[in-house]
Amino acid sequence: MAKVNLSNLNVPELIADMWSLLNEEQQKILESNFLLQHYKKNEVIYCEEEAPTHLMCLLSGKVKIYKDGVGGRSQIIRMIRPVGYFGYRAYFAKEDYVTAAAAFEPSVICFIPMKVIFALVSQNNNLAMFFIRQLATDLGIADERTVNLTQKHIRGRLAESLLFLKDSYGLEEDGSTLSIYLSREDLANLSNMTTSNAIRTLSQFAFEHLITIDGRKIKIIDEDRLKKISKIG
Image (tube, rainbow, N blue to C red; front, side, top):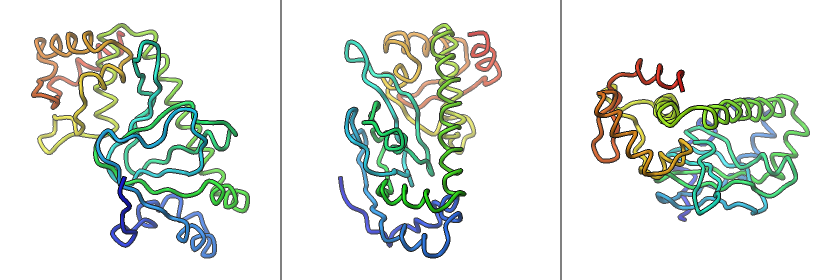
């Protein structure tokens, strides 16, 4: 894990949604407490049962929030894209982390001590509402994904995951290739299925001309049919 020079990134500009809520004095406090870290692909950012100490903000790259399950299988709970805030819920709840986080690809993360954030929230109602909205949004997404991953069949879950990746990270310049390259294991963990089922269902989607596959690159050919499969479950 390598430190990154703060001057290389305009952090206040990148976190403008939060920065704009602070007065000048509060901005100076926040600016004096930034720490930027660069993470390599697959590097762990925090682990389950660790004590939370910092608010984390993903400035570039991609991060997965996951939980280890029975038999060594992992479940991807959320995926973070820039600019996304994470790692702070446990601190507000006064508990240790119940999930872990790792970088999908080389990523730059801004760390701010939660003691500083807590002090600012106590002074600034707008900032408090900002985090309430963040938590409420994450809870809504989690509730919806829980239903999707437990009630839909394999085809519906995988279709849902592909559409989720498209909505979260967008497409390459060709307008159809997902702008994130997941291993089959990660795609399975995102879809709550075994790796073998993910591989088999992907191949079936390709046979049906819903997608094309080139290594880890997945190109969406028929989004409308994927949506129908996702809704049918």
